[in-house]
Image (cartoon, rainbow, N blue to C red; front, side, top):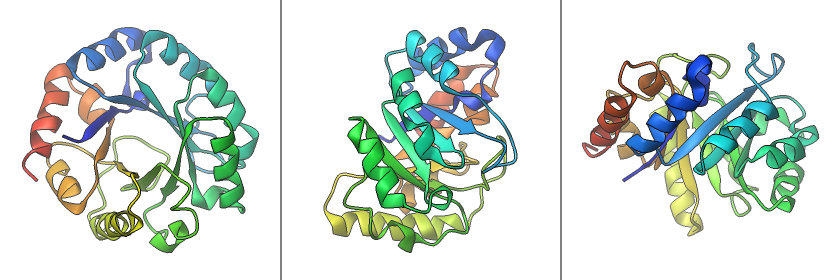
Amino acid sequence: MPIIAPSILAADFSILKKQIQEAEKAGADWFHLDIMDGHFVPNISFGPMIVDAVNKITNLFLDVHLMISDPDKYVADFVKAGADQVTVHSEATPHLHRTVQLIKSHNVKVGVALNPATPVNHLENVLTEIDLVLVMSVNPGFGGQKFIPEVLNKIEKISKMISISERKINLEVDGGVDVETTPSIIAAGANVLVAGSAIFGKKNIADALTAIKNASQQA
C-alpha cells in the first residue's frame, strides 16, 4: 500500500484543524506542506508558522517541500517548526550535496525534488545520501494542475536507479495525483502520493482519500 500524503496547500485554512483531523482519521499517512516563496516559483504559500500549527494538530509525519530559492537559509527554521523530512529542489541550490548534508545534520530525513524538465542524472551524486526523491508531475507553483504524462518515464527511470542502489529510498510524486492518474503512477514505481485538490477539494475528505487508496491497488 503506498503512502498517501494529503497536501495542506489545498486545504481550507479557515477550518484547517478540522480538515487535518478528518484526513488523519480517514487514513492519511503523512501530511505534505508546500513552501513557496514567490521567487523560485510564481506563488507564495506559507512558512514555518503553519508547519508549527500543523505539528500541534497532528502527530503524523510532516513532509516539508521547500519550493524556495536559497533553501539553506531556512532549513533550521522548518526543522524547529516540526518538519520530519525536508525536501529541496536540485534546481534551487548550486551546491546540492552541501544542502543535503545540512538537512541531515538536523537529524531529519532529506529529499531531493526534480521539476518535470530536470533530467534524472541530477540525482546520481546524492542518491546514496537521501531518503526520498520527489518527482514533480506538474510545473511547481500552483495547485490543481493537470498531470504531465511524460513524467511517467522519469518515474520508471528513477525507480530503477533506486533499485540498483539497494537503498530504501521513497519515490514520491506530486502534481495532478487523483483516482485517474494514481494507477499509472504506482505502476511506474512510485510509493508516495501527494494529493491536494483530489482530497481537500472534495466534499467528503474520507471518501476522496479512500478512493485514491483503492485506485492505487489497480496498478
